[in-house]
Length: 426
Image (cartoon, rainbow, N blue to C red; front, side, top):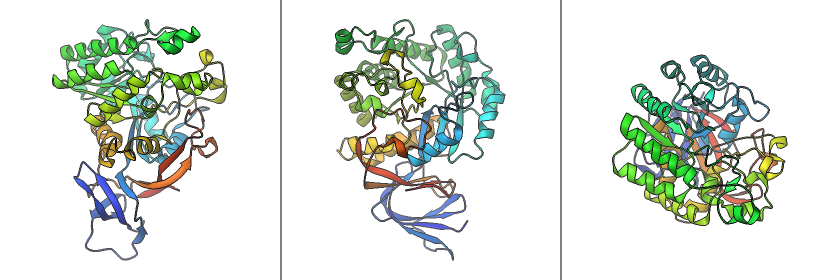
């Protein structure tokens, strides 16, 4: 491939301390230099004046559905959706059919990822068959290349198993990503326990289903050591618990999704109980979104993750209580955060890059999250002025289950480069 010069872009790379307009030279699969003094012959020059240049985004919470549910999504389609959203690396969850709970299944993910548009990193299961009864062969899973461990989709209710998982994972230097929903408190729950559940008589899920599990796992973290990552926070009370654990010096990180930042239980009601607003954990209250947004700005929250959860039409086009939980998010997350947080001055472009690239790369310990020379040329080029409307006809994902269809957004990834190759251009 000829060298590429990205000219006059506004580079935002907090890991390298860069926030300025400069040129980037790409040679082969790597970043050769920033503000190069010499340009090789035959270099392809792309003038990207007025555009931002970010380290490629990293999503540490994607459900690619392969193996077993390829009718919803597969690794190839998930990677294309990721590229269209500005992501260059995604970590795929273990709750497939069968789950990624052995070394050979981790290897299968890598084999299937060879032709993917972006880097694919498998997350291995904590327990065999995701049943929460017996630990999977964690050392073998780690040796095969899993970047983290998680039973996501299922809470780890067994405290002894969770304690042992943290201890083993500590030896393997892998984080455990936890889905914090108490299965008893949340049993048969459909929406947040509160005003809307009281109005409708629909079974609610109290915030304590989340906070009690987080508090328990923090106690176990103190006992066993390890690295704990809390997935998809939905409740204001969770923020205080996590903040105190961080102040105590524990190795704990956390994430929030765009939908838990931007939507509430009121949208469930106003949508007429559209099943695209059904997710787990459920949408909470305006107060919850406000407190979580503050934590986004003050550094308590480490990551914005998509929890990209594709479902086929026949699984979502049902009465609310019979519908599958979850929504897609890879193609909308960046623009949603830019439109509703960066452009409104709630967070800076640099903070966005920390949340969506630097920090997830650091937590997963993968080679991403910076544009330093010598690193892979994994780059997101972002147009802050591009206006567009979320339309299912334009999704690269196989599924269309999004509550953001019809939303008008400002700002879009217009080019995604992975290892020096342009994998998406708009």
